[in-house]
Amino acid sequence: MYIIIAGGGKVGYYLAEELLRSKNEVLVIEIDPQRAAMLSEQLAGDVLHGDACEAATLDAAGISRADLVAAVTGDDEDNLVICEIARLKGNARTIARVNNPRNEELFKRRGIETTISATQAILSQIEQELPVAEVIPLLQLSSGLQLIELRLSERSPVVGRSVREVLLPPESLICLVVDPGGVPRIPSGDTRLNAGDALVVVTRAESIEMLREAVVGTAHGMDT
Image 1 (cartoon, rainbow, N blue to C red):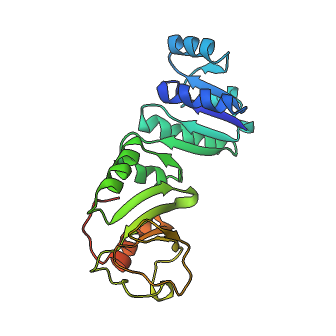
Image 2 (tube, rainbow, N blue to C red; image 1 turned 60 degrees about the vertical axis):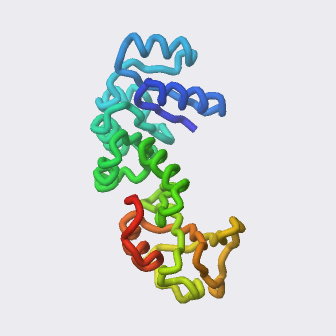
């Protein structure tokens, strides 16, 4: 794959290093001339000095043939602009680093579905360690889909029901049921749900609250 990385900070550098190690063609765009020169030495020249927010810079980087653009600068506004220009100039998939989790919805509204938030990732890990958390974000997938975990308490409206009896929001699917002992099983329509079970569900981001109400039956727990 040909991958353009916009932003040559620590995230961009280590990302480029790993992708090059995996035999991908990688180009890092860095706006700071000194940082660009240093990266060029460390990455054997796979660096372009320039502003990735400018269409001319992305053209010089070969955006028309890029398979993927990763906007990983420390500025959410810049990352959004880079992704939008990349989508207009070529057919590359775009991935954006989001530094402020509150901006994730803005990215989605602008059509940038794949975002990475370090804050959200750490929060998700913390939520997994909290016994009281009932809705836990696990992974953001493409096209607005998310993988979440729902923990069933005794007050859950679906306890005692089979999977086929659970009314889920559109485009939602129970992929895995994990019992209180940590044993996973792929559910069938007849699988009975019990208190203490954890359900791994694929759903759309906008359906999470509806899913919470249908499965958990409470608005308590940490927000996603």
